[in-house]
Amino acid sequence: MIERYRVLIADKNPRIRMYLRREFTMAGYIVHLAENSNQVLKLIYGPCRLDLLIIDPDLPDGDVSVLSKKLQDRVPQLPVVLHTLDPDSKSGRFFLNRSQLVEKNGCSVENLKKAAAGMLAAYEHRPQS
Image 1 (cartoon, rainbow, N blue to C red):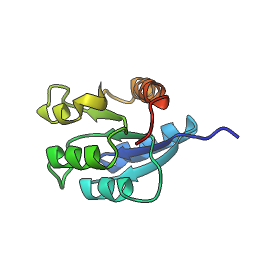
Image 2: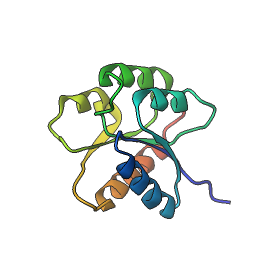
Image 3: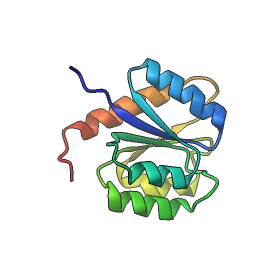
């Protein structure tokens, strides 16, 4: 049996979350959703293993630097794809050591899927901590 990757998608916009869940589920991923930083942390600290975080760093309830620090402390090996409207945002710098930036652009999700697959492939053979 082939194990499917578990992806956490965090975005404040419910339409984007649902669209990405549908697209990634159809591509064979197990998808978890979060609408704010608190939910991201709840899932990260929860019992379910996650393989990738796709996040818009403009979440409504948290400081992205604090969120990044907590993620680094809990799951330093977790790859992150930043999915944002503002590719020049300073918030992305907090995830730079293990992230890739993908700009939100219209209805196409193909660049995001490619980035996710690339990050998973790059981190697949690294030792888990």
